View 1 (cartoon, rainbow, N blue to C red):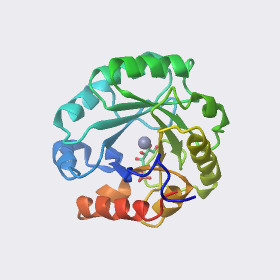
View 2 (cartoon, rainbow, N blue to C red; view 1 turned 60 degrees about the vertical axis):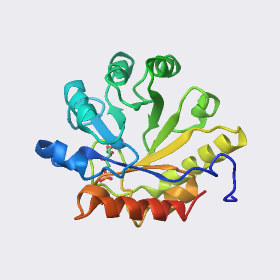
View 3 (cartoon, helix red, strand yellow; view 1 turned 90 degrees about the horizontal axis):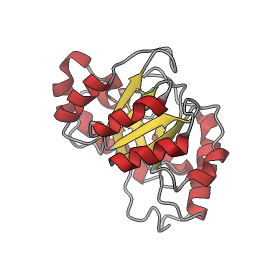
Length: 230
Ligand code: DX5
Ligand code: ZN
């Protein structure tokens, strides 16, 4: 694919550090370390949809009040139809729920947008994306999980790249401006293949927080992604 596609021409790679890899009892200081990020990625887990538990709206509201950058909330929870609008109402810039968990994904996306958030839908590694082709106008971003959701520090799954590429090609063919996000195992050695497959928004937990200089890590990831654009 050429580099001068109109959908991507002005787009730089967005880097969204995941605070799942941060020190939870020093959250304010951790958020200050990533002030050059595009968004802070906030992983909400309920121990039902995924076998892990993080936090809920009360904590996210405090992160929203404290963060130097807008919030990109990733809901790994059951029954997002019930809970997702609350995260938009507290001011999150984007709210992404899992397609596998939602009862009425399009109606839910409309509610999120009506509140003022970007509406996102996420798919686990084994979930096909073809059903999303006709929904590109209903969402602002699609998250293709590149690990099984639930834990940070897992290995990137390259077998998710063909469906990301098909999604990116379909979005381009339809003239869609939708953002395509990847999450899980993204770092200096894997970001290029995700960018080449069509991702423009990159979540990175351990690759940003488990290093001495998060801003340098963010800059390195952004440059690597930009050099390998779809
Ligand atoms: C996993 C979460 C990710 C996680 C990524 O279920 O959705 O956001 O924090 O962590 P890394 O980048 O360490 O794989
Ligand atoms: Zn996530």
